Length: 99
Image 1 (cartoon, rainbow, N blue to C red):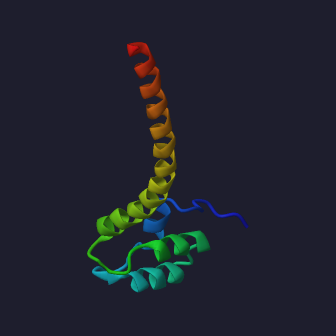
Image 2 (image 1 turned 60 degrees about the horizontal axis):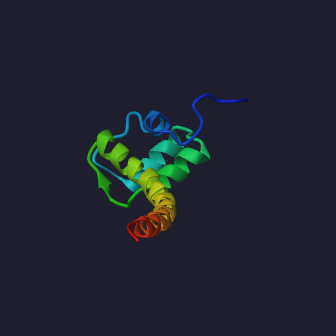
């Protein structure tokens, strides 16, 4: 039976943490999500979060967002390497124009 809302979206995480008492440790978030029958992907996303106490749902969402940003930063690191190569190529073309 297919379920709606599967995936690692912030809305799915909040759905499975509905009714949790704050402040809550990361392990409390995991236990609550398991109790709410969260999909494995949701549990995995919570597991990736920083191991600390969360004061409210907004705090959880900030941490959830950081996990996504970190994976984005590693990709942008590769892009910036290419950008540096392009910039140095442009510098060479500029130096030719000056001669």
